[in-house]
Length: 136
Image (cartoon, rainbow, N blue to C red; front, side, top):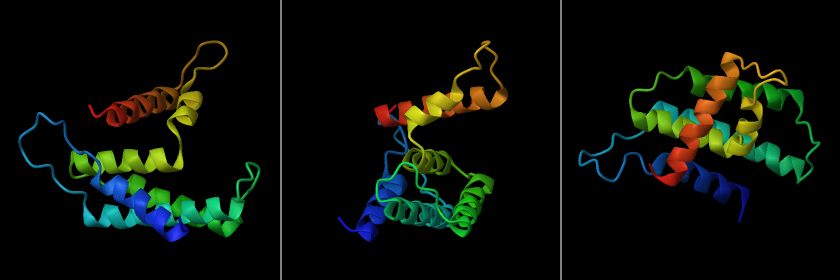
C-alpha cells in the first residue's frame, strides 16, 4: 500500500465512520468541509513523519515539520464543531495520530494519586474513543 493510499484510507475512515447509533432514525449530519480539509492536512503530515521515521521509535522530525504538524492540529482543535459528526471526526483523527493506549498512559494520576484536569480530560477522551470503537 502506498503512502498516498494509506492517507486516503485513514481520511476515509475518519470522515465516513459510523456517526450515530444504529437506533437513531434521523440522518447523520456530515463533517464540516473546512474541518475535513484540516483533518486531511493533519493526516498528510502524520504520514510524512511515519514514512520518514521508517519504523525508528527514536526518530525526531525536523523542526519545520513539527511546527507545521502543530499548526495543523491547532486548526483542528480551534475549529468550532457544528455537530456530533465534527466531534467524532476529531476523535477519529486523534485515534489515528495518538493511540488510545498512549492516551490512557497520559491520563494516569501522579504517583501520589493526584490528577490534574488534563488527566481527567484525557481519560474522558479515551473513554469516548473506546465507545466509538465499540459502535456505541
